[in-house]
Image 1 (cartoon, rainbow, N blue to C red):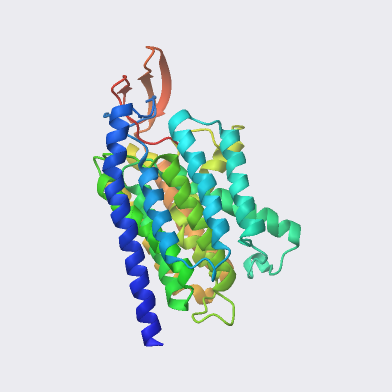
Image 2 (cartoon, rainbow, N blue to C red):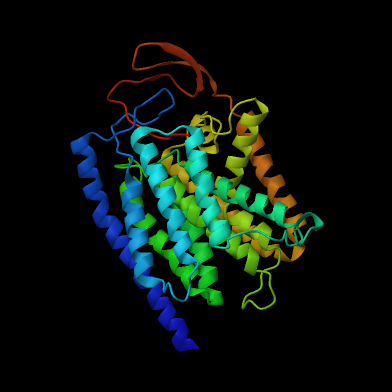
Length: 385
């Protein structure tokens, strides 16, 4: 048994190392191509960076992740993984096209539905039980399918929407991949552990180029990919963590899965809700994200990243310590704490106001932001959400 664990650990370390090396070597090439072809985002009044920065880091992330995964995961023992990689290809090219040409929200949503359908109907990544949440267990098939689609779409978009300051999405991705990968390693689900740690290795390499001041952004091709892999891992975790045959049984698996993703997931659900209540599309960009609120309070990019990751770690530890409370009480405690903090951050923020943001064409618009920004063709891109 010890020998098997040691072999698996070596496989995990090798996989993460291969992903790291490939991404680390690929990013400078991507930067060179972006410089030669002038592949930069078009700045607008919502950007906070003032330099030209390429947004194709997802190419390097995907290359390292995919090659490391294909080299380490044995497909004949894990036939569902061919569908995971198929869905990943859909999401990658969807994000890449958006980075290069800008897709409409409708086209992006359709692409995400296609990827979700591959995972659900072919890869069997679906929620068939609420695991005691709100008193429900087994779900009718139609409701389970709807919940599965909703979960995958929301998790995919959560990392895309949180990708607003240097290092934030990558750091949160490393955290979630490490937590899920560590659990799957501990219970002997080697393929899922390798999937998680291959993405973690790629993100560590990317973060070297993405910490403030960032040399490159991951773009949609990177952030959507992190969300896709997290959606696979969290649903698999929820489905097996509280079953009696698993080596490490985890009560309140739904609440703990939510805690692992709480910063990007709760921010996305909150912002989507605000947009829908205001009669707008949930994919309409604005400045209501948690990183915007922290920016308006004067936090630097590094401070925002550290704060969000520390809070996410705190909620994971809280959920693990309170797992015996059950999913309902545990979720209630976490949501109460989270919304109390968000309420203080939002309503206690006195620096937000109406400012004039000058666009490239010279027109002026009133915007809600923390400072006056003059945008020019030399301005760069930060967040796209």
